[in-house]
Amino acid sequence: MKLIVGLGNPGEKYRDTRHNVGFMVVDRLAQDQATKPVVWEESQKHKSLLFRAGDCVIVKPQTFMNNVGISVSSLVNFYTLDPSDVWVIHDDIDLPMGKIRIREQGGSAGHHGVDSILAHLKSDKFIRFRLGTGRGKESWGPSMNRKLHHSKVLALVLSRFRDREAGDMKHLIKRGSQAVRIALLEGLDKVKNQFH
Image (cartoon, rainbow, N blue to C red):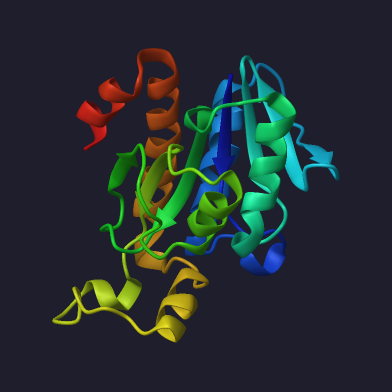
């Protein structure tokens, strides 16, 4: 069984922001996996919205980004899963828009949602699908590789995609769902070779 977790923040205020790409991908994944209209089950116990598809539970934590580890660890304990059975889908501003990278362990690279999961699982052995959202205006020009101040990072990840990025964003969400589905069917090595 796999626990497939899309990271994001609940509520209309955060809808369609860069930080919510994980939610967007699992919404698409649920649609792609479903045989009937998708209905998310609200779980107060796990502080999440859940959708079951075969031997997968697709998850949208409702705790806000900095506390997603609470939801993830609750579900891991409930289903008695190993950390490697947890697949986390999240935004990454340090990857160019549209790039996908799969990582099987390691640190958070400053992503607070990943930090929370690391802290609550007490393991780094969960799988990450890192989806490049770029740096918005910072992606063009000499500041491209500059380390951003925390306040700029926060403003960036909570910003919405610009009109000229709409096509790239839709393509990223489609490819993100495809990457997870291929990994489920054919394994992580196959998807790494295809998407890296």
